[in-house]
Image (cartoon, rainbow, N blue to C red; front, top):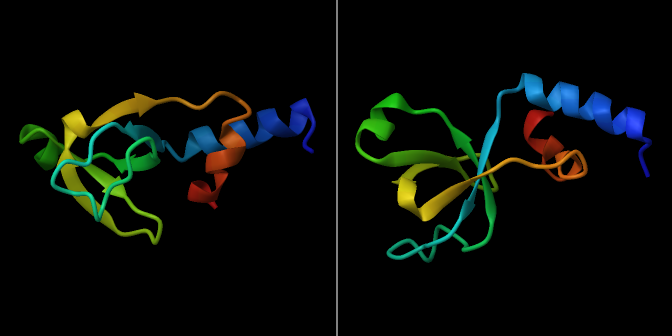
Length: 89
């Protein structure tokens, strides 16, 4: 188990990668690609955003565009950073 100091250090490292996350709340039409209640990493995509889409990274690192209304933003707590540190390694 990590100490509070170690958790804070991981948080500082993680914040530097500018990762954004969202929870999937719908997979209508994309059941094979999206899992409801799963947390996904988002990649900024200005062109997609103009069309109401967000770029989502899957488990193997591939990214795809999906309707933004299928996701809600998620900001992890300090303990939650441990769950998502793998995206910045």
